[in-house]
Length: 64
Image 1 (tube, helix red, strand yellow):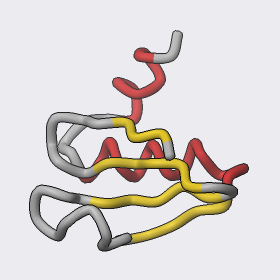
Image 2 (image 1 turned 90 degrees about the horizontal axis):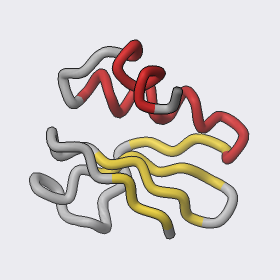
Image 3 (image 1 turned 90 degrees about the vertical axis):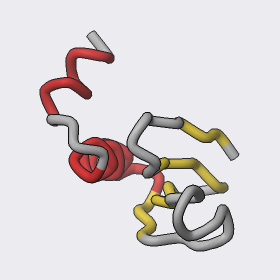
């Protein structure tokens, strides 16, 4: 498992061959709100950024 922790509470983590969206502050670490296949990681991160009140452009800028 590789957690990536944004400030807004929503987290994308990789578990095996999929990415999981969680919000442990509100629902606990065991509640998976959504999951994506491993090859759709871009969509998972974009969704997480939007839920945390950030833009997709901020995400792309972070990886340049």
